[in-house]
Image (cartoon, rainbow, N blue to C red):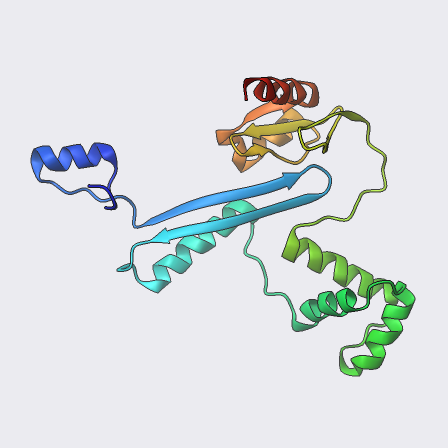
Length: 202
């Protein structure tokens, strides 16, 4: 039964009874990349049987998005995507210079204040790349992971097979996250100990 949409157990059942019980026609996988206080990115992979109608695939994708984001995202405006490209093409300029250059090049899509340009760019990068601007508040570092990324003291984390999540302010907040179902809720000190033990085993 290798290569067929059926589990090992149902394959045995089919051999014994000739009753074919297929798996769900849509199989969803999530992949989350998180670096505390810096980046958060989740991708969705759908494996779909070819006979499934497009509208049902769309419904499954919307459900997956809702589980991750907690809402249905709005489409980014054309100006928002253009701002990312514009800022990237004018690296080294101040926000005042970027503001003047943008309004001169895009009179119909002008910004009234340079802070609006900066906010639009920052939010666009957060949405598209999942990269958050560095926080100004200085956080106490309890240790680092194997890649040298900081683990912050007095915070809570979710540890799972693919790594660990961003910080939470309390155990309750961590447990309320959807990913806690397949993760272990740990303090920063416990996370450091677990990562150290895993490194020794490998």
